[in-house]
Every structure is written in structure tokens, then in C-alpha cells.
Length: 320
Image (cartoon, rainbow, N blue to C red; front, side, top):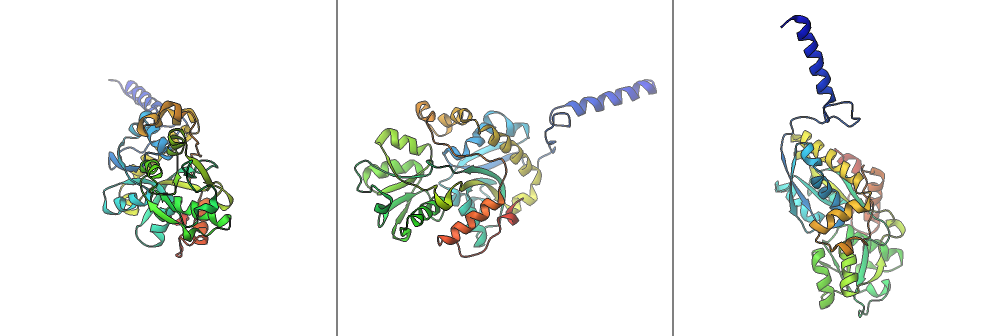
């Protein structure tokens, strides 16, 4: 082969490589870092609308395109996912910011915040009860038993903050810990007087047992409350930085897709076992694509104001 022909082929190869999606640089997307350290990521999730982007990313092949496979593991709440990160049973977990911040502040875990997940809107984080309940107003929650999915998490914080805003003492409430899927039956059996429900369980309970809202917790200081996101251990982030970057890139694409309600509806019927008719009327929050540190500092302030945190923690130092 002559020298000019070899030179031509070399230039042609360089042009083709540059044009391949994911390598470069014509698509406008961030280049993919080749060679993730770990191909399979064990991810903790709940059967709630908050994690719809994870299922969108799986459905659309976003994770696959980044060279990672997701192994889903169901957890009861964000607090339940943290021990999995600490003991190595989980690589990443969805969880509420309150539990992540509390664990970091108390030294129970050394966490890195990977991506934002869900932000509240009014009418989607509700304390509900049955139509025949004696609980009719927020004031009736005093000295009553209220179900939350885990203690000392964002659900409890939301109830406490909303009651405080109405001049009520949340310390009189007996918080009962149980998984979201069990709360509807617990209300029917009168095991609890009320329950803090999220979607799809709010709409399902309203449709099936006529559940009645008694307190919208996303009010006052809790307006636009950051609900939850995704975290990993500092150890995992340091040892597998390309893996975490790949996970985050895929998830952020899906977070943006979830801004279209129809996209969320297309997956919740599967992983959350939501009837298509119910999926059409779900109350949805927001799916941010970036972590807002100032909002997380507001969560810290709200935790302290409601007696759920005494230690100091800086969310900015927890970012990757």
C-alpha cells in the first residue's frame, strides 16, 4: 500500500470515529467515558412514582448505552437503603434527603449524593384517612396514630412541619412505621388513624376505599420540598467513578423525559402495578435534572426547626 493511500485511510478512520454517537463530539452530548469499572449496579428503589425515571432509563436503553446494567432491589424507604450502601449490599439507592442528611450528620454513613430524584408539589404528599374516621381536620391528628413508611424520614418531617404551621404539636402523634403498600389495608382495619401516602397509593386509596385527605403537607415552609434522590457510599464513588458517572448520565436523561406525564404513566402501570385508569390521574411532583444545594440546605433548616436534627451537615460537601 502506498504512503498517500495509508495516510488517506488514517484520516478517514479518524473522521468515522468522531462521527460515531457517544464518541464524540458532533452530537452535542457529553462524551461517554469508556470502560466502566463495574457493569452491574445494584440499585435500591421503592414502588412509587418518584423512581419512574429509573424505569424509563431501563426501558429506553439509557443505562445499556452507558455500559451498565441495573439490578433493582426493593426497599421500604430511603432509611432502609442506607445500611445496604454501608454493608455493600447496594451500590446506589434512591432515598429521601432527610434520611441521607441525617445519616451523614450522625456519622452513621459516609455518603455522596449522585442525582436529584423528586421534588414536591401541593396535593401529592397527603395525610389521608377513611370516610368514616373521626379524624376530619388536621387538629384531629393530635394524639392519633399516623402511618409513615419509615421513621425520621421526609414523610415524618412533612407531617411535623405541616402540623407546626397550623399551631399543632406533632410530638403528640404516634408515628407507625409500615411500607406504603400496606397502609390502605391498615386504614381499613383501623390499625392506624391516618396515613401519609404518596403516589400511586394516594389515588389508589381514593378510588378503592374513598380515602379522604385531611392534611396537605406541602404547605408553608415545605412548599417545593425536595423529597428524594440517589446516593452512594463515598467508598464506591471513589473506587468506581466511571460507573457512577455512567449511571448519572443515563438517569439525568430519563429525569428530563419524566417531565412529560405520559412518559411516567407508560411505566408505572408495570413496576408499580397501577391500573391504567388510575395512572391517568396520578398527582405528580417534579423530576429535577440537577441537585439544588440551596434547597437541600433548606431541608436541613426544616429538620432542625422540627427537632429532627441537632448536628450540622453541609449538603454541598456531600456532592460528588
